[in-house]
Length: 142
Image 1 (tube, helix red, strand yellow):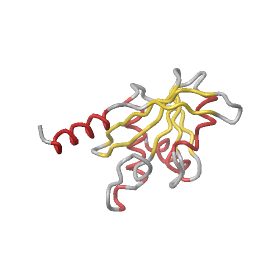
Image 2 (image 1 turned 90 degrees about the vertical axis):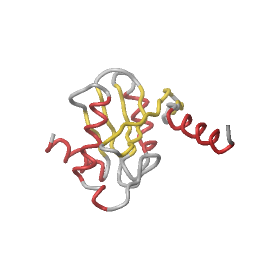
Image 3 (image 1 turned 135 degrees about the vertical axis):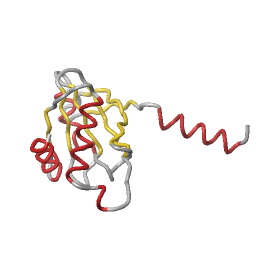
């Protein structure tokens, strides 16, 4: 097997494995967070999740990372399934070219893909800055 083939297979294996990381809040409390990926009409949207219970989705601002929600994730993971999404164009999520891929409708579709991925038909949405606009748009259209 050629070196290039081995490297390609290794890269594919790394992309499909879900990663786990421990996050801490300001008190020092911690929770293990799993990283996952959902397909939203051909766009890979990365999320981080912890806990069990009703689904809560955190939607960050246009430039903020999922990690901004770490304090809330630790606290709420005790009674909820918390999911911090990385919106398209940020962090490890796909970054499709063209402004037409970054509309409120597209990001609302990404939120819907996450809800469906977790087998739910609804979720509690918490948005910060432009994430609040995305959450509002989703609530008004779905």
